[in-house]
Length: 253
Image (tube, rainbow, N blue to C red; front, side, top):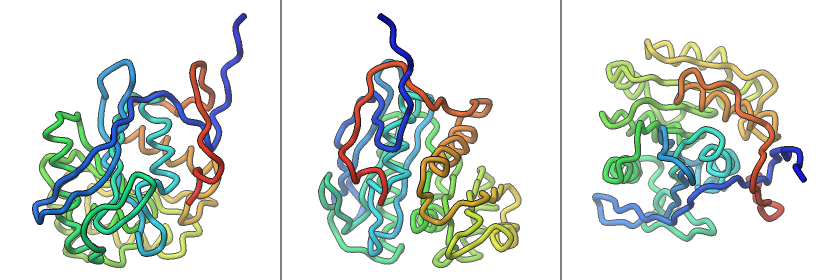
């Protein structure tokens, strides 16, 4: 007897091949992470995710990034690489070293990009959220990277010099800026990012810095996939296949 497709909800986990990984930095640290790839096909492109501020609860399981890993391998054929930056802990484990405010984290970003290169993960894009956007802007203009997508960029650590570097780099730079962000709102973001000629700033009505709520998450994931896979339509909201449910409390944070 056939069954109707099930609604994809906040705690829905779709099929993927998920592998615990380690990244090794040039300054001798081991960082813990996970790589999720499609079960039945090679990935079409890769998201290297950079999480929010670890001193304020950010880690590789911050909810938008984890939902990307739960959904995008199955729904869009993407590989999703998540990891804890130096000194950051999650259920996966604790990465070596100590938080350095975005400076020594340049080695962490480089290690993630190198991992994607070594394992021949195709078309890598950076996906940074909050503090992760600062890392992308300060340290992500690497020739191996095809572009960067920024969620809630505060532009507090990244400087005009970093923006000028991205302008010269020439690769796509997309900023999703919540209407009600606590740090940087759309009009000011457009002014600041005007230094980067190829930058696209998208104001998201009604959204807040933490992207809480399924409508906000779906908007983020749709925008991400549309940039990484041009021509890809909105993601399905239902799934006709195996699907598990994560433990309560893992969806947000």
